[in-house]
Length: 264
Ligand code: NAD
Image (cartoon, rainbow, N blue to C red):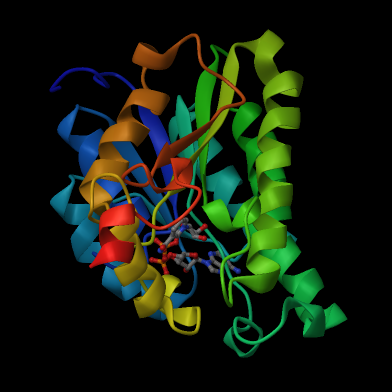
């Protein structure tokens, strides 16, 4: 795959550590020759990101908290100043109060509903608009979603509602930016053990259920998500936009647990 992204530059938002899905994507892109910039949420994350960015040959890191519009503006201004234009954007950001990622969705508070929607959904539209302004020759924009958007997953609650809105945003943004040669897609990843993933109560049970019941009988790695992201961010997928692409060991096609597991 070396060379597939040669001459292309882009921004990765959402590397918290080397378990982050965004890190799997960054490694795949860098391995294919892309030049990368990163955003991080606050100084502590910045300190963790620095050696990782260096590993993929990048010293271009800017702070960005998507709850703060001024911080989003400053991040994209820094990008515009140093590079002028970009070819791709990865939005791998999500948050909800973990106290509401348990129990009933019905008990979600107005405050956490709003905050979850702003960080996990609206931020994508906000950064896509700024990224598109830096893509005069077209480009590719990617976000991360989860199957809890269309089917009920225990404890995923308001995140599922936010992911449904995020997936709808992917389709609307694809329609808005298509004429400019900018493609907008999402990867719907199976459960991965990350900082954000651990916020969902009993995430371990969902992880183990997937291992037993997905067609591939295992979970996916961040490197596998990275491989699919490389396809969606490169010219290999030049005819694809508005798509929600599952990277979940096939779990989403099942309507009930595997029969061999039920009989075991
Ligand atoms: P992660 O904790 O490694 O990454 C989440 C990132 O969101 C972090 O880098 C964090 O700094 C960032 N973030 C949160 N609030 C922010 C804010 N206000 N401003 C800027 N950044 C903020 O976890 P991850 O699992 O790699 O999550 C990345 C994406 O993948 C999320 O959208 C998540 O919902 C999605 N996803 C995760 C799984 C899973 O099982 N882990 C499955 C499918 C989709």
